[in-house]
Length: 266
Image (tube, rainbow, N blue to C red; front, side, top):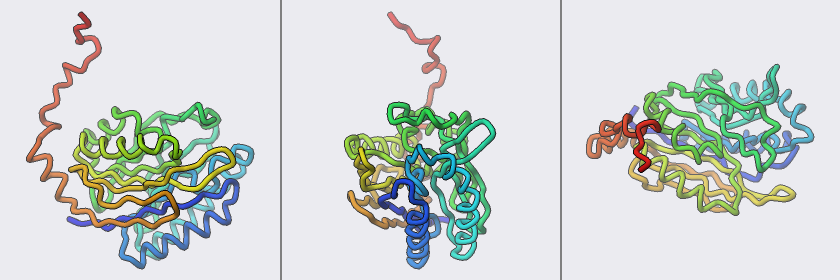
């Protein structure tokens, strides 16, 4: 496929209120499908927010939420991506799931880079990056703080990703960093970056929105404001190879020069 219409569901995730969040998510997914969207992104921890006091209960609810999303994906012919709490024997993960248009959960990426200053140490640490095959190319899954670690995005791209999907709860106080990092990850890796952030306020923190879709050229195809929004854009998927032919950065890499043991420190 040479084109993809994608959508971002930016909303005020209600802390510890899955019923409200699920209703909002479902209504938004239906609206995006009615607009011809084929891939929809939701924010990080969108079912419950970072409700640490109820985290175990929320994680136990996730299988039912995934089942509901799978039914929706099948009904609407819509791929769905976003992060939810996952219960596992070793602990609770912050997991970015990808559900395909047939309703199958194709991937679950456990967040590697936890933002410890905000309390994310309660989550078990992910150990592996994840990429999923889609009708629109290989997609690398990222979650929020991962954006600050360019090595991970580059590794996904070297493995074949042409799309990077980011699910986030990025605070307003650092929203300028979010804007810059999204464009940087797109341009330096010559890929599309689709990033869905939440908006609104928890008791102690305001979230910045600015969900966006960025082209491999760094063009902002769509960007939401600071409030609730459904943002959409049509991606010309041929732009990835076009840009890479014009400026073949990935071919010009020199890995031996990046080896820490090969740096002349003077």
